[in-house]
Length: 158
Image 1 (cartoon, rainbow, N blue to C red):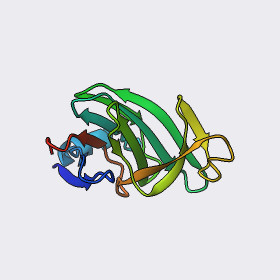
Image 2 (image 1 turned 120 degrees about the horizontal axis):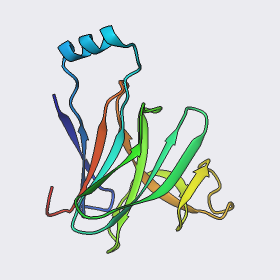
Image 3 (image 1 turned 45 degrees about the horizontal axis):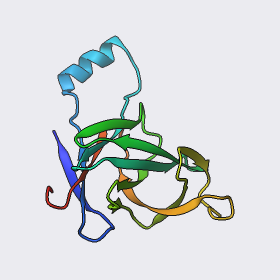
């Protein structure tokens, strides 16, 4: 069973973001698996670039106590990458993306970023610590472990 939600990019009407939740395992298969092995369900957080340009992506999340932002994943047109492997530790993830032509997918949740590859603890005092302060958009993955794919699209290709 697939469910999807559309998210408008904060950069006006320049782009649209589609979040797609992948399907669930059938109850029969799940029951057979549970009988053989008791293991926690795994889920991945994936990003797909369905635009005509290369896109750079950064991700932020919290474990309930501390914030972390990290980047950059560079996705070619029609390319996908897994940003988080395994069980999703948070319900909400935050994404900022920009393409090589200056287009952005952003929001109102501000996190620290850097021009080069980064992994930054905390989201306060970005400028004081030598980082940029960037607005990320929120992705609600729900409370259950699921596979999530965020799809960045061109405005002419919803």
